[in-house]
Structure formats: structure tokens, C-alpha cells
Amino acid sequence: MTESRDASKPPGPDLSQGVAEDRLRDGEPLLGHVGGDTVVLVRSGPDVFAVGANCTHYGGPLAEGLVVGDTIRCPWHHARFSLRSGAAEGAPALSPVGCWDVERQAGKVRVAGKCESTVPSAPRQRPASVVIVGAGAAGAACADMLRAKAYAGSITLVGDEEPGPVDRPNLSKDYLAGNAPDDWIPLRTREYYASIRVELLVSDPAASIETASRKVTLRSGRTLDYGALLLATGAEARTLPIEGAGLPHVFRLRTLADSRAIIARAAAAKRAVVIGSSFIGLEAAASLRHRNIDVTVVGAEKIPLERVLGPEIGGFIRRLHESQGVRFRLEASPQAIRPGGVTLASGETLPADLVVLGVGVTPRTALAEKAGLKVENGIVVDERLRASAPDVYAAGDVARFPERVSGEPARIEHWALAERQGQAVARSMLGVGGPFRDVPFFWSQHYDVQISYVGHAAGWDALEIKGDLERRAAVAIYRRRRKVLAVATIGRDRVSLEVEAAMERGDDAAVESALSAG
Image 1 (cartoon, rainbow, N blue to C red):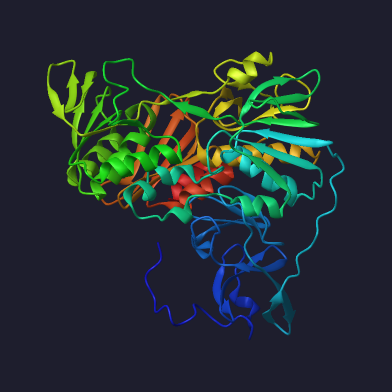
Image 2: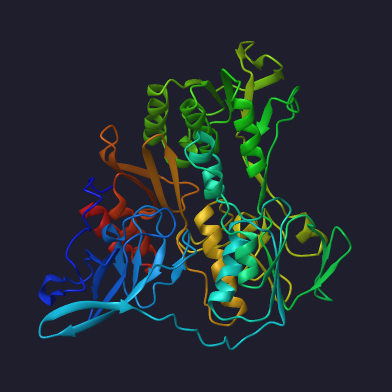
């Protein structure tokens, strides 16, 4: 994060007056302003660009980001923007940043007026219509990218929960904690979809798919013809097969309705039990503590998140939560939930007037299975995210795809990855995409600590911690047969960005170089 400054003073030099060109170093953004806008000036090779200084996702400081070719990447959540046009090319940002004309003369660089919006050329491949089943991260990103790439045909976005696409990560973080208002939550509104001519259907979910006739039948009986189909049905939060799991004070946490129900119950709750020491469970625990509710986390693991992050970071996260008053019952399993508490297999009863289940999710593959698509722990897709029927694609939590870093098929439940896959499907549908090469990335927030994770390590044979976890400045490196499969960082945003870019290129030496420097 940047240091605070006087908000009444614009940052850096007035770029409309120009700066000496020799102040610009290749790949190092210069923060300044043009009128009332904050702008970054960037030299990339022989070119100089000027774009808005704040990421359109959560407002991250692009001046602290990474320049890769003609893109700039946000240090907070790795969104990517074109330096040439400001276009949002990589999630989690969906909206562009501003773009300005640059004039170079007599050794000076001056930022002039804003660039005029350019209309992209029509795609060479144009399906007659596109149907997107699933109005979550992948589906919303696909619809946006289709229009951004000048697709003019019919797009129908079919969901099964109001209000349509929402910022799902926020449901267990700031929104649940009470720090984010309702108007932060929709990814896109009905009015927005109307403005880009996307039909949003959220009260009439898909009931069946006929790949031979290229039809989707909705629950109401309405049929939708498609030229290309995306299945982005996501995953469903699991429950527990124990007594009391259906009681009214027991909640799963997946949808906006789930988060709102927990918030309503929390208004009168004093003690909560979170079952599951997963990311969702622990983020929910932090949010409930922010509401001054006593929280106990019950988990089967010896150390929270040990399977994903290893014992060192898992132990750090436990200590962090304990410092905020969270209690843990680990290597424990719930036996029953009753109106006043949760009984463990050990016989101990934990008082609770609110219970949150954070016990994982299951991919929603029923539609695909009924349609005869190949399904193996998710809908199986190729490197272009194509399923086993012509012009049918899958993306997001439901897709099992060839993951390039590990070299193995994987189904990965990451928000930003789902959006990037949706964007990639749009490009593939229009014939302007290639094999999906994005590196998995996620972030998890615990109080004021963010963990950023790039790559994918389902298992590893070596784990190295560099830096100091307690000082919140550390890098965890996950290797198998010496190859770096994943990197988790705390307070090392630049390292995270550099590793991701190197992994995208398949450049193992550059990965090692970034880790040595960080």
C-alpha cells in the first residue's frame, strides 16, 4: 500500500505540462496528473503510453504495478490493462481505465487529451447467437468480452439467483463484515446489460441442453437456440450429513442470499461456530469477529489450510485469527447441531446461536451429464476450453482444463481464474483467441493481511519460506522435482506479479530470478 498523502494535492507532476523524456525508465510507471485525473506515464520499449492510475476492480495503484509488454498489471489482484487503449484485458477488472494521447517533442513527453474510443473491428468468426448458462464470474466476463470484441449477435445470460452476477469474493469478506454497501456487490446491473444488449434471465434457469439441435430449454419451457454455448454453472456449497444441519440458524456461504441471511442472523447473535477451516470458513470467521461476535472454528486439519499452503503459513494464519479472539477446535469433527450449540465427536458442546458451514463445494455438472458431455470431476475441456460437443465451452469452477504450470488436468475454484476463462471463451468463440495460458491466481483476506497465490500446487515435495511471516513480509515457494509450481506471498506484491508473468511465458529461469530478487 502507498503512504497517505494530502488528498487536496494531485499526485506527481502535471503531465499536461510535460516531463523530460529521460525521466522515464523502461517499464517503470511515473505517477502524475492531468487536470483532475491521476495518470501513469509508462515507457515500454520505444513507446510511451498514458493511462488511468487506478485499477477499476478495487482501485489498486497501477503505479506500483508491473509492465509486461504493452500491458500494465495491478499489484493488488493482478488485473491487466492495455497500455494502448486502457481496455481491461485480464480479470478481475472488467471495465477499462482511461487512456490519453501522448506527444513527444524536443526531449519532452506531454500528455494531451483523452483518447477517443475506438470501435474494434468485427470478429472474423460470428456465431449466430451465444447462450451463457451461469451468471457468475465466468459468465459475466464472457458476455462483457464478447461485446468488447465487437460481437453484435444475440447474447443471453441465464442464471438461477437474483440479482445476477455479483462480486462473490466480497460475500465472505468486506460485505459480510459490514464494510461494503449493497451497491458494491453487483458485478453488473440489469441496466448495464440492457445497454450492451445482453438479455439477463435470473428467474428461469436452464433445465436441459440438446447439443444435436443446439438448444437450451429453460425451466419455464422456453427454448434458446445457440450458435455457441458456454456452461459456467459453477459450484454449490456442501452441507453436512449430520443431525441439525438444516436448522434455521445454520447457513452455507455461497450466494448473496446466503451472505444476507448470515448478516441478518448476526444482528442478534453473540456466539458463532464456523465448521470448516477453509478459506471461506476463515474469512467468515474474520468478518464475524469484526461484528464483535465470539467465534470458534472447527476443523478436521491439524493446522488450518495446511493442505493448500503448508504448515508455516497455516500456523501463521491461525495465530493471526487467535490474536483477534478466534478460538479453534482442530482435528475435530461435528457430530450434531442443536438450537443452542454444536456437539463434537469428542462430546464437547460449543455454544452457538449462529453456525456457518465452510466445508467446500461441489461442481454443478448435472446439466452437462444429462447432455452427454464428458464429465470427470468437472466438465472436461481442451486447451481452448472446448467441451466434448461442437461449439460448447465450459469455464470457471465447473471446468476441468489442462493447467499449464503443473502440466496436469485440474479443476480450480478461483474467482479471477473463472473470469479469465470466461474472457478466453469469448475470444475462442470469435476466433481471436488461442490456447488458455493464464496462470491461476487467487487472494485471501484475513483482517489486514492479504495472501496472494499464483500457480497451482495440488501437492509438493519441497516448501521454502523466505522472509518473515510475523513481520508480514514473506514468500512461500512450492516445488515438485525442483520445479516451482506455485508461490504464495504476504506483503510482496511485486514478486507475485513477476512470478505470474514468468509462469505465463513458461520461463522457469525468470521465475527463479524473481524469487531470488524478492
